[in-house]
Each structure stands twice: as C-alpha cells, then as structure tokens.
Length: 263
Length: 187
Image (tube, rainbow over all chains, first blue to last red; front, top):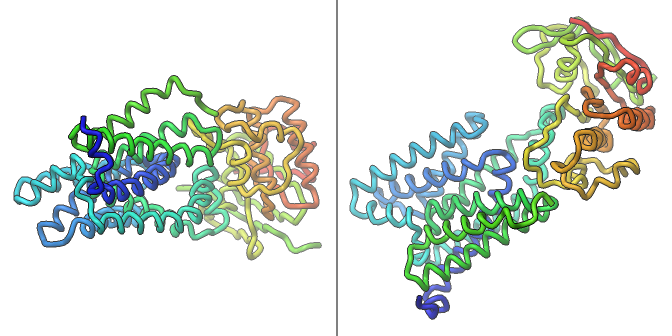
C-alpha cells in the first residue's frame, strides 16, 4: 500500500468531484427508496452509460451525452405515467445491450466502456468538477421544494388529486434531478459505484434513523465516509475505484445488524 | 345558511361501472356528516368521487371554488420501513394544529414502531389537523380499541363548527356519537 498517493495533489480535483457526487447521490437515493423506485438509479445509470458511449462515437463528450440519455429516460417515464420498477428494468436491459454493443464495435468505446464499469474517477477533470457542482446547486434548489411534496404524495396518495394540484411538476423535476445525478455519478464514479451510493446508504439510514431529518443526514454521512475510505484504499492499493467503493459500502451494510435500528 | 361546501345531485359514481347512486346531499361548513351503508354499498366510492379518483357517471357533484380537501383512506399508507417520527408525519401531512394531549407522547416515535391503534389515531389527526375545508375519513375506527374510539369521537366532536367532516363507518354507535347527521348510502 502506498498511502502517500492519497495526498498527491494530482488527485485533489478528482477527489473533490467525486466527493460532491457522493454527497448528493445518497440524498437522491433516500427519495428514490421512499418512492419504491430505487431500481430507477440502476436503470438511469445504464441509459446514461449507453448514451455517453453512443455520443462519444458521434463526437459528443461523455459529460454531455450521458445526461441526455438519462434525462430522456426520465421524460419517457414521466410522459408514459409508468409506476413502479418495470420501466427501469427495461432501461437496464436496453442500456446494457447498447453499452456492450457500442463498446464491442468501436476502439474508443471499448476503453470507455471498461472505464464506465470500473469507475474512472482518477481521470475526472475540471469539467467533471463543474458538472458535479452544478448538480449540487440544482439539488440545493430543487430538493427543498420537491421533498415535502413527494413525501406527501407517497404517504397521502389521494391528496394531490383531491385538491387538483399540478403534481407532474414536482414528480418530473425530481425525475430529471435523479437522472442528472445518475448520469454524472456514472460518468465520474462508474456505473455500479454510482448505484451503490444511491442504494446502500439510504438502505442503512431507513433502518437506523429515528426521523426523516436524521435519515437524510445519516445517508449523506455514510455516502461521504464510504467514498473517502474507498478513495484512499483504491489509490493506496492501486485498485479500480468502482469495485472498492461498492465493497466498502457493502461492508458498512454488513455491520447493520450490530447497529441500533428503527430509531 | 352558509354556502354549501359540497353539493351532490342525483350523483352516480363508480369505476368501470357505476357503484353508488343516485344519491343527493349537501355538506355545509361545520357539519360532521356520517355515511352509513352495507358492505359494497359504495360509501368509499362516494368519497373517491369527491376526491376525484372515481368516475362520475351521472348527476352533478359541485365543490365550492377553491375548496381544500383532506382524505384519510380506509387503509392509510404504512410502509414496511418508515423513517418518519410522528412529528414528521404530521408536518408532511400539513397538520399544523396542536395535537390532542394523548397523541403528544408518540410524536418522537417512528411511525413503523407504533401499534396499529396509535398509527390510526395519528393518521386521523394528520387530516383533521391540517386546516382543510372538508375532511373525509374512511373507516377511521379500524384498529382502534374502545378507548381509541372514544377519543376519536371526542376529537370529531371538537371539529363541529370548525370544518366539515365526511365520515364513513360500519359502526352505528360511533356514527351516532360523532356525527351531527347520518346519511344512508346504497347502490
């Protein structure tokens, strides 16, 4: 293990870009879990990966191509009024097939395909950091507005219809934010790394938190701590980042039976 | 007499096919109106028609412009994992009125750690305390013991004159105790 790599200035920028995403994705994951749509994250990540590679084949940067595919998925889901996880299962299959076919048939696609699967955090540049900060700013603006409405829609499902509220606005706004988050997360942390940040911290926080505010805080804290630990281990041990992040989060999840649950 | 909040005239409502009606009634501000009828008579469907989630086949259902409605479904959503305290639950329901004293002791407990009766009383208060013009309660005595029923009847009694309540229940004695009048509903 070469621990001096962890503090190497060369990796400060990638670390910062990933850190911002590691803070935002668990918060999005809490709402996805509340809506029973956590599979959305994996569906959107696959679409983002596929559209990123398709765009690359056409000369479009991944940081533009990936969000476009994920946003298209979110709009399709909103317009189709799909509920539950079926549509996300279809997105996973379509994204997976497209990703592997593009990767198999283009030289650059092959390299990028591996990078998306393994997580290419160390190659994150200023564009990724700016994109992550845009995502964080979007979340800071959108989440306080949509969160109480989404919670009310989930816990009191007749409320919106009974009062003639324009519910599509907040549902679509959140779907778009989740799509953007997953696209950037996939581009920066890798497909499964991004999914793990959306899935594992909320899974733990839902069991342990005494209230909603604590659930949000705990989820974000687990995401950030897991990311920091994975970054250090992967860099010092010269390991691919994505699998290390997933392993660290799963190890944290394995500790859950030892921790206090349900408040 | 004050302007009615709800007015149904020869209303026929249902889903793929009509389930209830024709039925006519008026709900005025401050009334607690009970809906009584046999299983399948369409009491819940009537509430759904008012809430806009059941289809109106015939007749007329008029809501006062700008009317706000709060609705406690027959089976309120209770998730397997629910990281909301009682206080969170009431806040996100929009229930800003101070809850009755007996509920106060449960407000810091997680919703999924409560008994069925505790959950039901908090769910009932979540719609009663939110200041809506019309509150609709569908079988709110589910899971309640006699003490809980008496408490709910007392809460509903305190609502008279403040807002209109439409209350569906199988329990005749509870309806008589809680309501200012009771309507018979049939298919």
